[in-house]
Length: 460
Image (tube, rainbow, N blue to C red; front, side, top):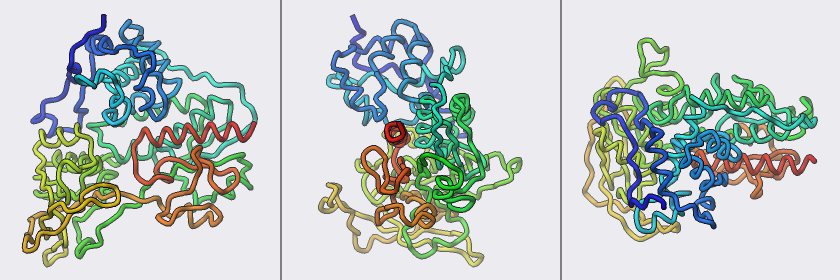
């Protein structure tokens, strides 16, 4: 009989007061005993509704059953048939709105902790198990992958397993994309990301860093001069959006992209050992309500600042994961809901001194069903801050569009594709944030898998 407990086994964590002062991973992971007990909550449903919620179609009941039996190697091998980055997905995927939202156990209690079990299996394999690097025999096909984020790495791995010769071109000096520069160490350790990348390199995938496609070479040159049979564009959405309010050019205003890149990839939190410092001052405002805003706020808190999240809707409308909001509150981040900035003020030296805000109330729903925020007249006030971090979304970098004029794109900048990642340009495929705009790691991975499948089918 399965364990019919209505509650998930709790995830061991650092205490809030301790972790708020360090960049070590917050969630410590399940032990063998806890993982097996949690796996025993699975009903092993024949119709497996949880799988329909997974963008990469991991056979969830199968791997959970193996954990229940204590066969952790088999559990990992099952996951990796569909998911090339399981240790990452087990940490950062929004399972609560995907696989776990379909779990039958969630009808009368909490769903099975699928993400926590995936993380356990992946961590066990990295530390104690074996990770296969088997591929099909080389078939002569060659692919170029633009970007080494989750979409690009997934596409590259699937093509390599199918016998393709794959080269990934990464603009930065370290591969990994948003996994390296966007998600903080305390949520996703960089050594772990590097191990996942090493596993993909072991499949024969070549990764070229400091290579900006659109500058060093164009997509047409990759196809026509370098002889690639296909190109996958997974260049992400790295162009930050701003509110376009007065004062955004003052010293002390960051995009969340720049702030997190300095923190994560350039380890600014180790200054003066790091070459790239980051200014936070004693008071920081983070504008936005998504996961990126939570990441920026929690990083600023760890650097010693008093931090406030400023969001124009209520907490119920915040797009951030509930777990991240909960952790931010535990760590002492303030939340100013129904509040919207209208200007940033500076001192005589051009540094941020305050942010002018207005209070909001929720009005009628907009086209997406979200209640539109409306300004409350006479509610203007100044919030004293030394740093403002803007985390209101990103758009695809226009460089690919500008240097590939016959590549169809949407008005807002995303590359136009069909459901399998085929663009309107022959031999060019795309997926992830470059197509959808900023989304989740697992959705980008799903897009990379679909595009790889299409590339294989189109080149048989």
